[in-house]
Image (cartoon, rainbow, N blue to C red; front, side, top):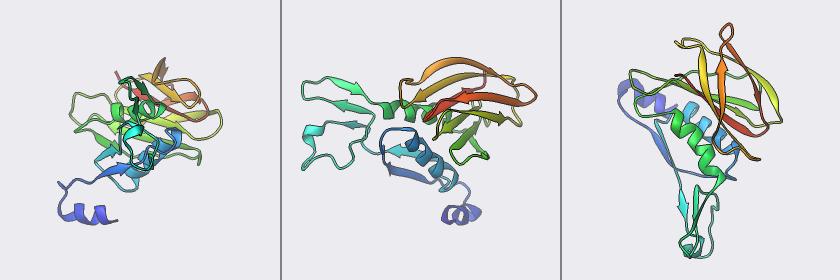
Length: 187
């Protein structure tokens, strides 16, 4: 509500979150981003501590989720949270518009971005917080009939290309794996 009130008189104002948690670096973390975008209406999400070197935390790391973990020998490991964050960070680029989305299933959320006169492609993310399920996504206002698809899951997929999805009568029917985030990019 506060963001709405401020933007009524100052639409150029931006709001962002600068300390969002990585949580358990899973699909639920993308649901937090969904809440920041659609409920808090932020223009940007800046996650907390994207790179961590655990030995340097005094008293232990209070928020162990991260994108990259660096060891004392200089080696590093890309964590699962990076790939979930990448789903949203690649789809939503500067200058794009957030589009209205809607889901009839409490275990599914959709985040959508429109090109908005940028060079970036229209894109949307289907988030499945439950068991594997078939999801029908109705796409309105787009100018294409196919989308390039990338998926991240808790189990194995790490922002993997999984082919193309075709619109049929304005709908994409997608078998969403359990605990997954899948991004659909227009050409």
